[in-house]
Image (cartoon, rainbow, N blue to C red):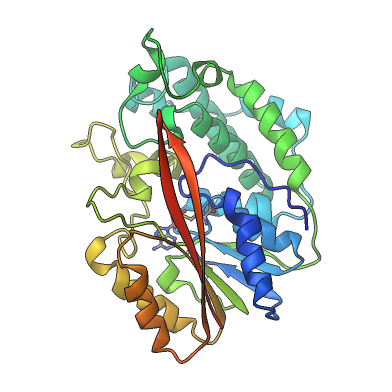
Length: 346
Ligand SMILES: C[S@@+](CC[C@H](N)C(=O)[O-])C[C@H]1O[C@@H](n2cnc3c(N)ncnc32)[C@H](O)[C@@H]1O
């Protein structure tokens, strides 16, 4: 099956591995109709399951991701029109705007003018009643905010990387400077192409994985990756700014002013972001879903080791298959080799 997937700039996205992941799943010749994607992120796995006509339940701890899940997975028909984009970028007389990003985030992620635009766009979105449209418009804003950032994340105060007049060996200065309006047109064309109805009642959820009350025939588990070097950067630290936009009304109460990047501490959850508790929580999660087919995306050299994880899985008295996929990627000027592992428990 040829799969066309939304482009993502999301850290840890499995976009490139999706065809391989489905090859492994299909190799097991298992029957299932519903899929729960517990750590949904960019939504590419959920979307690929939607394409396969499964009933899909997307889940992620962050509300901004929940909106991405709702725009791509739950949404069966609503698309973005040119007049929607005009509405989003226009300052309307009927709205009394606040300028919180402009006032608090000066010189941190975006230049003043863009901060002001983010304030306006965000409040235009929150002014919309239709919940699916709200998510769809947030999708445009989040993709645009990510593409305008060096490395696409918010873990450092580093606007200077964008504004300094220097020769760079990373990122794309031209892309960072594209106006929001043009980016919205581009991302609207992109997402409009992906919206379709697969006949199922697909739903986006926003629970911590351990508290998610949803069940499905197949449960996909792709938790944050814990490296062995103790240099883990949490997803909150990478994406807090987008989470703050969803909570525009009160995010200021959650800013950590001790951090230079003014991290917004909303929906922080350390269950799978902490080396000492990660494995025990993963075991709890797997045990909770032991009556479903479980598919785990994992990487060699992480914590716990593949061997420790497999030893635990063998205690479940189920069939355990392990697939591995070596690939290399370029970071700055170096080439790195990575080994991605897929474990299927059935
Ligand atoms: C490796 S990424 C998943 C990537 C995703 N499969 C994709 O292809 O885009 C891990 C995701 O787990 C989410 N996350 C972290 N802690 C979580 C928790 N306790 N419950 C649910 N989601 C969590 C993060 O927000 C992040 O989106």
